[in-house]
Length: 252
Ligand SMILES: C[S@@+](CC[C@H](N)C(=O)[O-])C[C@H]1O[C@@H](n2cnc3c(N)ncnc32)[C@H](O)[C@@H]1O
Image (tube, rainbow, N blue to C red):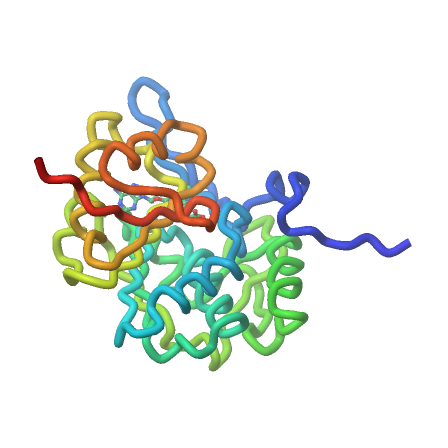
C-alpha cells in the first residue's frame, strides 16, 4: 500500500526539526528556556501555496514586495518561501527577491551563511512534496555539517542570491524597514521575548505594515495569546492561516 505524505497532518507537525544542534536551546540562570532555534522546511503552520498566491494578488500593482523574515534561524524558512514563490507564483519573483532574512544571533546565522543547510528525512519529503519532486533542481546533497543529521544540502543556482542573511534583533530593526509594502515574517519566537515586549512589538509591526503590509506569525504565537494582542493593535486575520493585515485605526 502506498502511504501518501500529507504536509498538513498532525503527524507531520511533530516531526523532527531540521535544525537541532547542541546549541539550539538557551537557558537563563533560573533554567528557563530563553531561546530555541528549531525550524524546518515548509513548516506547516503556514499554508505556503495559499500564502504566496495571496501575496501575488495583494501586490499585483505594487512595484516591489519588501519581504523581511525575522527570526530566520538556519534559513529553512526563507528557503521555503523562495521555493514557494518559484513553484506557485513565479510571476512575483522579480519583485520579491532578494528576501531579507534576519536573526538576532550571529552564531545561529553562521549556519545559514555557511551555505550548507542540514536536513532530516521529513524536510526532504516536504521539499519534494511541495516542489513536485524537484529536490535536485534546488539542492545538491553534501555531507551534513552537524552530527546526527541526515544530510547537508547546498542550494543550486535557482536559489542562489535569492536570500540575504543579516544579523538583527527585530525590536531594534523594524524602524529601518521601508514605509510601505512590507511583508514581515515574525514566526515562532515571540515567547522568547519578555511578555512586556509583546504590545510594543505589535504596535511597531502595525506602524510598519499600515501602508499595504502584512505579517505572518506561527503556531507558537497562536498558543500564547499573540493573535489577541495583534487584534488589539489594529490587525485582522486574512483568509490565510496565521497571516494578518492592518486595518485603518479609527480616529475619534
Ligand atoms: C524557534 S526559531 C523559529 C525559526 C523560524 N522563524 C520558524 O518559524 O521556523 C526562533 C528563532 O528566533 C530567533 N530570535 C529570538 N529572538 C529574536 C529577536 N528578538 N529578533 C530576531 N530573532 C530572534 C532565535 O535566534 C531563533 O533562531
